[in-house]
Image (cartoon, rainbow, N blue to C red; front, side):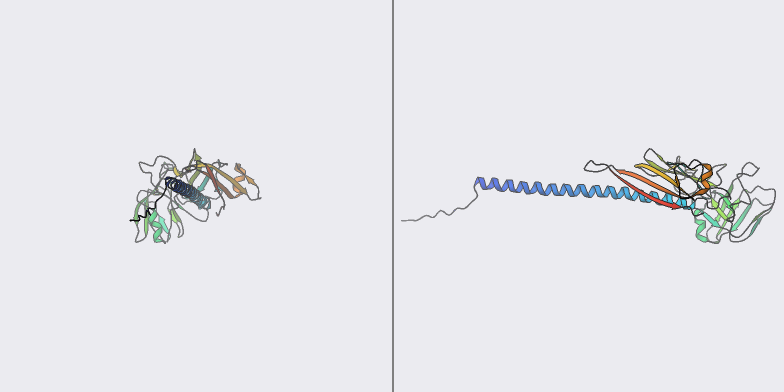
Amino acid sequence: MRCVINNNKGFTLVELLVVTVVAGLAIVGMYATYSSTQKTTVNQENLVDVQQNLRVSLNLIDKDIKMAEALVPAGTTGIAVGSNATTLNLVTASAFYAFARIADDEEVTLAETSQQFDINVPTSVDRFEVGDTVRIIRPQDGAQPFDPVNDASNNNELLVTAVDRTGPTITIGNFSHTTSLQYKEGDIIALVNDANDAPDPSTIVWDLNGTDLRRNDGDNDDDGSGTLDADETGPDIIVNDIASIAFDYLLEDSTEVTAPTAAQLEDIRAVRVTLTANATRQLDGQVRARSLSSITYLRN
C-alpha cells in the first residue's frame, strides 16, 4: 500500500490581488513623493534664478550710482533731471568705466592736432581702441582744457589714433584749438559715447520697458567696447521678467521723494532701488514674487 503526501504550496488568487494592491499603493506613494520633490526642486531652482538676476541687476545699478557725478564739471549733479519713481537718470564722466590717468605734463601746441600721452597704469589702456571717442578731464573740477562739445569748430570729437599697451601710451588726435593746450599729470582720459555731439558728461538711464530692465548708456554699446556695432540698435537689456522697479531718493534732510525737483537734485545723498520679479515657470502653477532692495550712497 502506497501513501502519497501532497505538499504543494502556493498563493491563492486573493493573496495575489492583495499583494498587487499593496504594491500599487506603494508605487503611487513613491511617485507622489518623487513628483512633489521634483516640483519643489524645480520651483526652488527658478526662485534662485530670479533672486540671482535681481542681485546682479542691483549690483549694476549700485555701481552706476556710485560713479554718478564722477569727474563731471562743477555744479553738475549726479542724479539728473527726469529721474522719478521708475526712471533713474545718472551723469558720469564715462558710462563705460574706462579711464586712463596721464603720467606727465604735456602741451599740445598750435601746430599739433594730435598728442601722445604717457599713461601711469598699464592695464587702464586695455579699455581703449583706435577710433574711440574720448574726453580729457581735470579731476579737480571736471573741466576740460579742450572741450569738443563746446568747441566752436563744429564740435570736433577727440579720437584715439594709437594705443601702445607696452608703453603704455594713448595717442589722441583731432584737436582743433586757437591756443596751446596744457595737460597736467593726473588728468584723466575718459571713454565716451562715439556719436557726434555726444553728451558731455556721459549719461546713463535705467528704466523698465514692459518686463525688460534696461540700461541706456547713450550709444547702446552692448559689449562695453565703446563703439556701436551693427547689431547694437537699442538700450542694453540687462534682464527680463522684471515685474516692477522703484526708485526712492534720500535727501540731505533725511526725507525721501520719488520725483525730485530740479532744486532737490543737489540735495540727494542716496538712492533706494527696489526690484521685483515673478518666478513664473513654476511646476505647481503658482506665481511667486521676489523682491530685493538696496540703498546706495553717492560717493562723488
